[in-house]
Structure formats: structure tokens, C-alpha cells
Image (cartoon, rainbow, N blue to C red; front, side, top):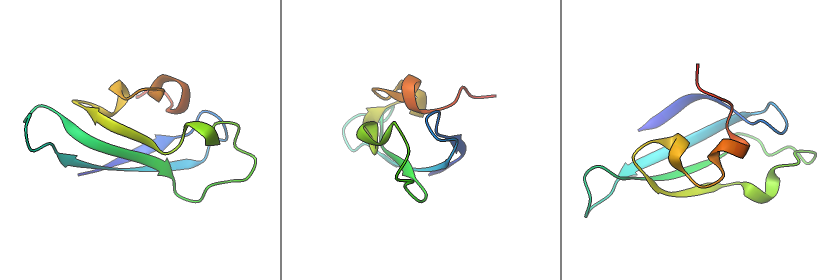
Length: 71
């Protein structure tokens, strides 16, 4: 699944994400979130890519620092 409309809080750049179903726990997805094109000036570069397993993208570690609030 590809998640759309993600924006980086640090640079307002577009982020892309990819998720795949976890093989052992059906309610968890494996996520990877990163800039479409990583800007050199983004202050949040150390946090990206966001990776991990969660039911929802906003449950990933540091998601609250990187992702804009969903509308």
C-alpha cells in the first residue's frame, strides 16, 4: 500500500511511504517513509527514513516529529 499526502514538518517536502503486511501479525504493517527527493537543508534528515511496524503510519517512532498532522 502507498500512503499519499504526507508532508515533512521540517522542510514541507513531500514524503512517500510504502507498507507491506506483516507475516506474523495481521494488524501490523511494515512501513518505510522518506522524502521523495531529500533536500540537503531538511533539519529532520536524521529521523528519515522512518521505518518500523505499526498498525497506522502515525504510530511509527518519531512520526509526530516528522509527519504533518492528518487532515
